[in-house]
Image 1 (tube, one colour):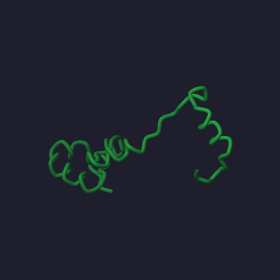
Image 2 (cartoon, helix red, strand yellow):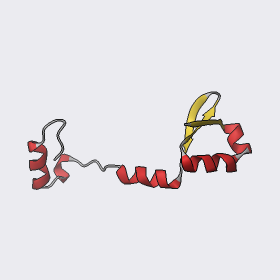
Image 3 (cartoon, one colour):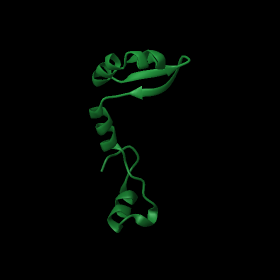
Image 4 (cartoon, one colour):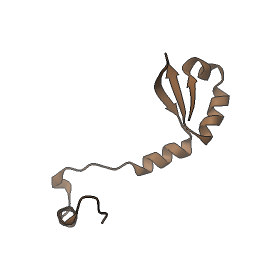
Length: 76
């Protein structure tokens, strides 16, 4: 993974934006990671993997039965 200081990113944004299309770029401030620059494709892929949390009372009877049958480490 590429790394760049925030100052260098400001001075050469185009270069680092091109790099971020291929791989995430860690942006550092005072030697510590503060942000990541990623491609739009990577961002949308991550968004599609995001799960929604529900309260127990929001589950359907079918979902409750599936949870009751579930075993740790096994996929349904």
